[in-house]
Length: 235
Length: 235
Image (cartoon, rainbow over all chains, first blue to last red; front, side, top):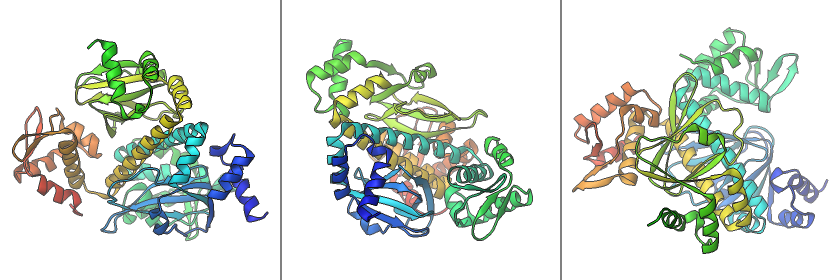
């Protein structure tokens, strides 16, 4: 496939653009820029200053907010079909935003103006973006409630299960690999805790025989036990 | 004003519907139901089951998620111009949602189908709802980052400042009253901590002479000191 063909293929297979005519997809192909990231690669902040909208075609990225003192939190993992960027003036920026690929990722970028004229031209698409946005709001609100009410142990069990079932794969019967290179620091940023606390809880999961971990990835040996922790009131 | 006049007045003064013709506002007036809540009144969950969309005309409500074990967290305070409800299938509901008025509040309700046909008919409105939604996403993400990286003391200082400046009023020179009846339990749900911890931190703010509180409301005597805590790292 040429790059143009590949780009159109990605646009065609994006639920956001379903129902858009081939001619319009050609238009889209002209205004969007396709970007590929390898794991650990990040989007440079320069791109964020030009008020771009990003659409994830495939892959997985973390969206992390860092404050001036170096404390950071991963507010969301975003994957295929998710949008991020500056649709709206964000006010004063107390946090720096960082987008890092966790898997090989294909992104498509357009400017805010391009997105705006696209949505004005296609009411169907505007409605679909609104529904996507409401889905994101529901996810964020659930995540907030989890972080505000659940223990680190429960949050970590929930996270490992999500990563394993949504983005991982089964390697041997009953064993799911996250298939991600993810450090305890990354996990701490995702559950809103310290690396020390995460290492302690991961150690206890390992001792119980629920997980197996190496420097390269984490494998889940006992989904059922983790599920029990995730749904149980904790410590 | 008759109820109908009042409803049209509220619709006219809602930024979401700016640019909508008078005829269409009449249509809107027919499909929306206006509801008034007094402080402490809540929206009955029955209404949420009919997949309604709610628009806040004026006032202030808290959106609280509670789990089966009685632990709850206020994920968001919503005020004039904010939307909530079921634009999108929310999947299995792990949490019950609770909407409680903190001030006298006027809400307008329509069904999901009504909202959908409204947005399909008015691309401008769909784009505006999308922008509102993105603004909400940005607010939620900042709130998540705050809760994941800041101490309870910092979070409480930030919350008191927001409540005082956004919804409070100046009663004597330099003194802002929250003008809300809000308990330590409510504050704990808002910052994601325990009532005990909140009472301890509120006690320290009181001893420092930064706040004054009674059973009816909280007054901020020293905005500058609270601002310093809100922006400072550490316990």
